[in-house]
Image 1: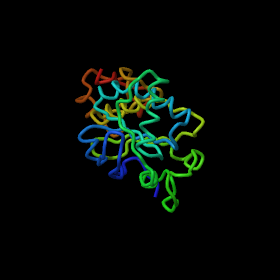
Image 2 (image 1 turned 120 degrees about the vertical axis):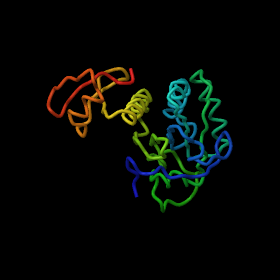
Image 3 (image 1 turned 90 degrees about the vertical axis):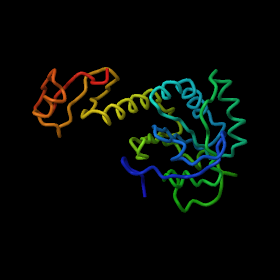
Length: 220
């Protein structure tokens, strides 16, 4: 069954470049990003892992951990890390999950549950659907998922924007409009009637339409 927003992120234990983890315990009380790769030593993924290494502090500021997954072994991951660090100029400060038996890829519906075999002998094309990003909240629910083709590098600035939005809207009764960035105006959710809105937003709001009311970012 495919995973949807607000489903519980399936828990698992796995070997990583930083030792064995229990995924839910590893996330703890904060947020987590799980992003997957079809194979080690692939060009697009190499650039992604390096870029995210350079961005890691921005996620840490938001109490969000990063963990990668690739359908290969820990030893392969560690060898690949050297290339990633050399090409990006950044130290990889987050773990990479080894998914040699395809278990996590299947658990997260990135490969069919009845897929046979292990990482050995498989190519990146065999695993081309293992290109997903999952944003997981402190409640271990999936807050966002994205799947990219192998030929298109992922936009991690967009992931950071979504994280900002999810954290904001979890705290306040607002939603964020198209292309929103932290500090810009937000939208009062329709479930909040005007009487309640007066208490929540005493400085008032801009009514664009009865269902579209804008207020300054309450976290700014």
